[in-house]
Image (cartoon, rainbow, N blue to C red; front, side, top):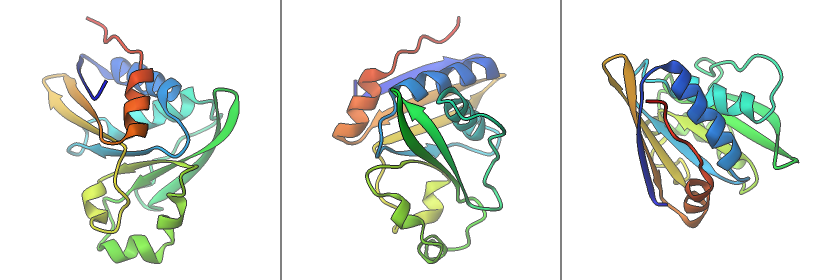
Length: 161
């Protein structure tokens, strides 16, 4: 599947999608999250990380720019690194922080506000767009690489009515 769209009627549906993504992601995946403030990017990421087995708080990396998490995927240890580039003033800041080294084909890198890191940010495998629609959210996932296709093929999610 190269493309997936759904309507998420409430936050619990966003959390269910995050849990479904946790079962679909594979090591090395790069995911870009697009959407306005309050669209649900952090909630989706938090649900994914918690469903992948992280015990404890999942913080928004708004001020630290990145937060790493050690999880289990398909019974294997994996790293998920959550980036929030909203407060980044230039793409050079991304390079100066050494973040590019995290995109090593092993870590799962989830990036909020990726446009702040262009053109130095590695390309995504999956692009997720969230848009507020009334009390819910419209979500679109696009596979942009063979690894992204594998992720969307593994995705099993049926939004609640």
